[in-house]
Amino acid sequence: MTLQLAKVVTALTEKGWSQIHTFSPEQKEKLASHGHFLAVITLGGAEKEEMAALGRETITRLHEEYYGSAAGVAGGGTSPLIKLKQAIKKLMVEAGPESQLSVTAAVLVNKVLYVAILGQGRLILRRKSRTETILTGSSAENIVTASGYLENGDTFLLGTGDFFQLVPEEVVQKALAAGTVDEAAEILAPIAHESNGQGLVAAVAAKVEEGKTKKKLRLWLPKLNRITSSLQRVKFNRLSQPRAGQPLVKKKTLFTVALVLILILGVSVILGKQKREKGVQKQKMAVLLEQIQEKKEEGEAVIELNPVRAKELLFEAQDLLKQAEAEGGLSEDFSQIKEELEALLPQVLREHEIEPELFFDLVLIKDDAAADEAVLSASNLFVLDKTKASVYRLSLPDKKSAIIGSGGKLETSFQITAFGPEIFVLAEEGILQLEEKAKEQILAIDSDKNWGEIVDLQSFGGNLYLLTDNNIWAYSRTESGFGAKRNWLKSEANLANTVSMAIDGSIWVLKSDGTILKFIQGKKEAFGVAGLDKPIKNPKAIFTNEDTEALYILDNGNSRVVVLEKSGEYHSQYLWSGISEATGLAVSEQENKIFLFSQNKIYAIEIR
Image (tube, rainbow, N blue to C red; front, side, top):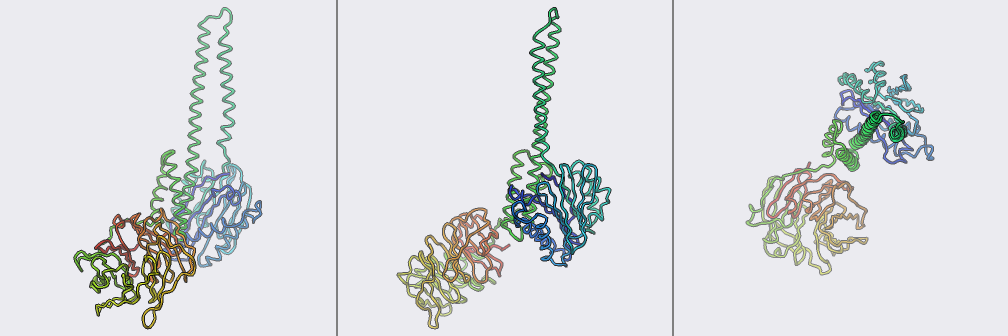
């Protein structure tokens, strides 16, 4: 059995929130065990600003509790009615009495409709010419249930208590007696919206259908074949053998009549075929529209709770919309849902086309200065200029700058890091510590031929860490300087083709193919990226620290900065063509800025 659906729901009001959730699984096994799902939900008892988010969470939890359950009794699981009641009961416990939760829910499994109501909602059924109230809710503390078989052509309505208080009984009967659920919604909607925000008014009408179109085609075609055969016999048997003495004119007349009849039949067949094709196409488009609506609503419900899943659902809805557009163009209903999707997608894509501000030009410090490497420490940016053999300090709050080291051992410098006011530079002789006031370059750690090819230098907790092509070396801080190097890794790891490292307690290593490795206490942890629209390509740097909530990737190959949750889920991205030329980045979530280094310029992107 299939359902044709139409919904009537008012907007978020001061009294509370009301919404309708419907869903039909695409997997045949899931559809057979759990069926089509319909629910009318209301909430109250919270501030209006919080209500929409609470509502979306409520829909998600109800959906997860029911569809996450075991199969029905036929599959060795619990009855759909029991699982539906359990899902609502769990939702009621989680929400608490202050939520003023009301749920009128039904599932259609094969031909059986299972209904559970918490609150004052109702189920109304129209069968043939009779309309009856099947089930009425009792209170916000008790869940009432019922089940029964549906017949082809049955129409039923699930609604909130406020809906039935507002809409007269005779209007409900008239709506359910209409030919389609769309016509029913057209009758009910104007009255429902007259509530002016005084009630939580929502209802969903559903009509049961059982493949009527295919049955009609099977009955019609054999009849058509018999009629065609009869006419052929008339044409070739009776008209081809004139009786003796019959005038030729009469034979011609009969022949002409037969031809006309055949022509009329041919036109009828063609018109009938076109009509059937239009009917099939219309039904196909209606199914597509319903699938798009379901995915859009399900995706919208989990935008805040599970952005990755929301993104998948909304993209699936968009793909179905493109299919509908290719097959038959977009009707008014499709155009409306297309606008709604276009409004929702930016919320999950979180793509920001940006034109960053020029934060600072290093030529103000020294002619032809360049930012080859840079590090953020406290409220200062420390910039290494390899060509000029200089280190510059730039204060973020007031943009005051200074040269804190130049020449000497810096002539062979490679990397820079900082911890508080202490600045360390990797050079050919080893790791230098710069003293800004004394203008000194102190050799803190001698160069070690066993280091390997050094990729990055970072500091954390006063200690220094060297990322090489085959290891991570650690130097612990002591009272007299730094101790001997130690192998920080405690498990094997492939560090070939690494490009950058960041430390927040864990160590994050970025590889040239976009792979991110995570290490905790020297051991590699499982980590993967989810939700990206396209893979990271030719990245240059990764940034995070103990004060930063996210991971930031300089994705030069795609001209973007990618922001990831530390769980690996996609958060957002910033797109600008100039990012392809950037050599590094640093992030101050306190200042709400992402800093990009490109030649002699430092750009700032506002974090959104």
